[in-house]
Amino acid sequence: MRQLIAGNWKMNGLLEASAALAGALRRGADGLDCDIVICPPATMLMTVAHVLVGSPVEIGGQDCHAKASGAHTGDVSAAMLRDAGARWVIVGHSERRADHGETSAQVRAKAIAAMAAGLTPIVCVGETEAQRVSGDALSVVGTQLAESLPEGFAGVVAYEPVWAIGTGKTATEDDVRAMHAHIRTCIGAGPRILYGGSVKASNAASLLAVPEVGGALVGGASLVVEDFLAIAKAANRG
Ligand code: PEP
Image 1 (spheres, helix red, strand yellow):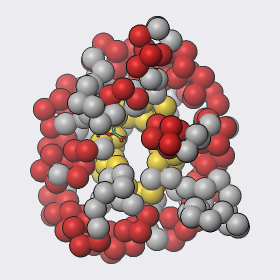
Image 2 (image 1 turned 180 degrees about the horizontal axis):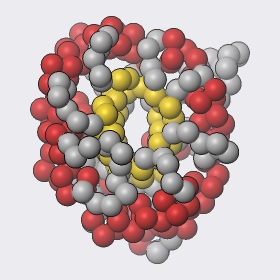
Image 3 (image 1 turned 135 degrees about the vertical axis):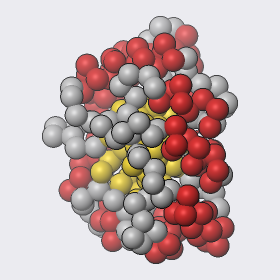
Image 4 (image 1 turned 90 degrees about the horizontal axis):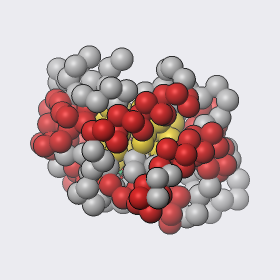
C-alpha cells in the first residue's frame, strides 16, 4: 500500500505564509510516489484548498466536533471541514487529549462523525513516557484503540508516543516495529498505521522502512517545505 505522509501544521502560521507554504509544496510534490495530506488550522482550509486545486496534495482538519451542528461555540463540524475542502481529519491527537481532556469515547464519536461526513479520520494513539517506562505501552495503546476506533472503521491510525512529539526524541526502530505489529494485531488488516513523533528528513527513511509503518504524521518538520518533501521522498516505495 502507498505510504501516507501527513503534515500537522498545528496552531501555526497566518494566511499569506500558509498559502505560500502550500504553493511550494504543490510545486515540489510532482512525481512523488506517496499520498500527501496537510492539515492547516481551520481558518486557512479554504485558502490552502484553493492553492491546491488540481494537485494530488489533499488537506485535512486537525479536529472536528462529534455533532453535526448545534450549540457548540468555537467548534467545527466534520461537514464544515469537508465543505471547506478537507478530505481528512486528525482526531484524538495527544495535544487535544491533554489540553482538552478528550477521552477515547469522544475520539470514537468524532471518528464516526468524520466518516459520516465523508472524511477519512486519522485517529491518534500513543503512550506517555511514564507508561513506556513502566512497561505499559502496548496495553495502553491497545486500550486506546479498543475505545477510540468505531465499528467499520475506515480510516488511518497514527501511533504517536506522547514523549516523542515535538521533543526531538524518536522511538527506536525496534519499539516502532513491536508497537506497529501490536496495533496490526489489534485492528486487523486494512488501515494504514502511521508513525509520528519528531520525524525529520534525517530519520524518515529508517522509520518508514519498518514493517507495518504505512507512513508518517509530521508536526514541526511539515512547516518547512524542504524538510517535509525530503520526508515524502523517503516514502517513495509504493
Ligand atoms: C504531531 O504533532 O503529530 C507530531 C508528530 O509532531 P512532531 O513531528 O513535531 O513531533
